[in-house]
Amino acid sequence: MAQHFKTLEFKQTSHKTLNAIVMETNENLVEVLNDLIRINNDRVDGYEKALSEVEDIDLDLRGIFQKMANESRENINELSAEIRNLGGEVATGTTASGKIYRVWMDIKATFTGHDRTSVLESCEYGEDAAQEAYDDALASDVDLPVEIRQIIANQKAELLESHNLIKKYRDLHQAVN
Image 1 (tube, rainbow, N blue to C red):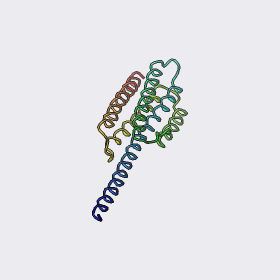
Image 2: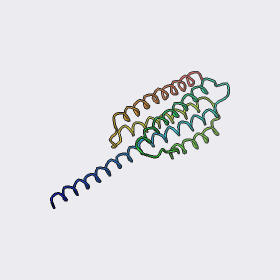
Image 3: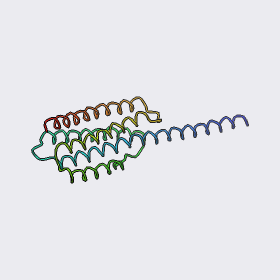
Image 4: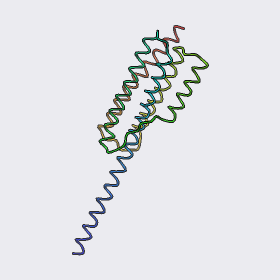
């Protein structure tokens, strides 16, 4: 009888330990995903800021910036669904570096004006930060389930296309001027 209680006690302790490990893993995974939500929030804010910086005649840039802000909104929705599935709470803010970036963008605009090149350079800086955040997520110590790793990799690839488009526009504009 005593042996039976020890076995039952061990199973209950093991079950509690397993639950604690799963909860910690989920919390760490939620934090990784929330970091990506914050960088996407930075992108939305950054592209909305860029939209206010470019002239009305820059229809090409306005369309691109709107598309990229929408791309991040879609990323946020996809990541948020995964966080809710894990029982986590979705982040609503931006990164500290994103806030610094927007202040830097304001200061730069004050000194250089609102020209296409400076706006595109600022956007490329933001795209570099997004790539770095996605690299960090994929390289983190958190055990990423295959489905979530694939979501992150797909979003990173889409963001790389955006980065390359911004870089191409910046290079073309510099070549013309």
